[in-house]
Length: 220
Image (cartoon, rainbow, N blue to C red; front, side, top):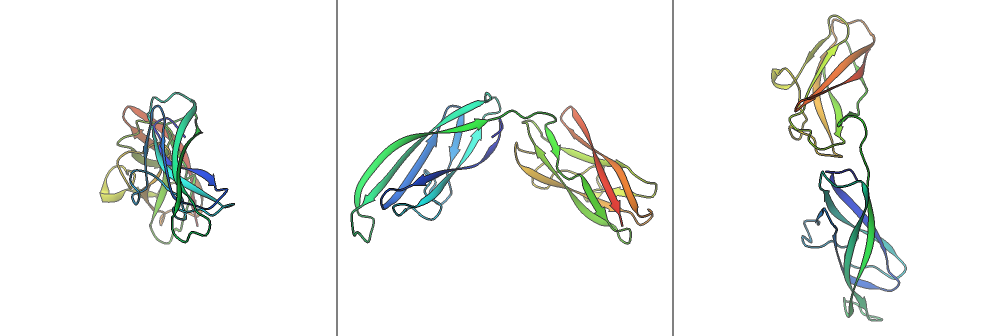
């Protein structure tokens, strides 16, 4: 994960005997953990809270890292409890057991710009104007109020944005959270342009930072 990132991570578990009522919590320094809405205070296995001997299943939880987290291997302490089922039991009947384990969460540094443009080529037909989506991802914290504009290209190309604004913004929120994809909508009107391949400039402005990337426009 990246400093400042929030996301779901999974841990794999194996059972040597039949178990049920599996409950797992996690914690670590500088790490905030939340769990699925159906369990709220803990997580369990993906296929239910039981696991047959010799089988594997995973348990997921949501991890949030502080933006100032040091690049390192962050230890996560996993605390678990389960019921070891009695032989022949049809319900969750047996001996309750608890334990702890340590997992390692690698936190890596992000190089380059804080915003990565993931869409590099757009294809449009010259017969009709079309809305298209440009996908971006934040690799560093602090990308708020992202504003994107597209310029350049051949004479006759008309570029517009939702609501007739002078720029376009991410679909889900004004900013981008670390490690999360979102798209901006851009309308290309190439009815007055000859078929061909053109290079455009995409500008991303947020806070006091302005970055530019290239976008290839293919008109067919």
